[in-house]
Length: 54
Image 1 (cartoon, rainbow, N blue to C red):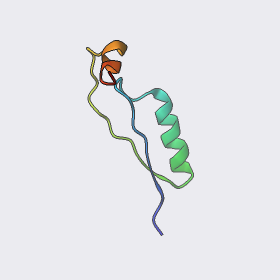
Image 2 (cartoon, rainbow, N blue to C red):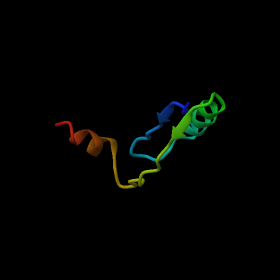
Image 3 (cartoon, rainbow, N blue to C red):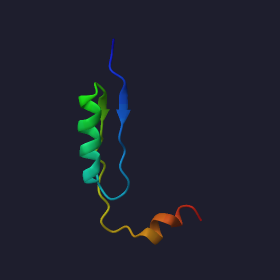
Image 4 (cartoon, rainbow, N blue to C red):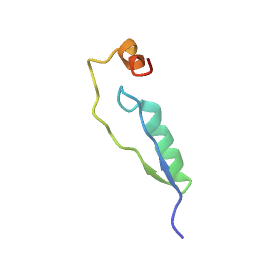
């Protein structure tokens, strides 16, 4: 039987440290964890982030 899979997807500012804790905890409980690392955008501001919703 295969393990259930959990995807941990971070926001625009990189992988928060707490995600490493989540990954370790899920793996200890026999889950397969996928935590992709997307490019970090250093020039983004919260105002520009919300512009996409306008």
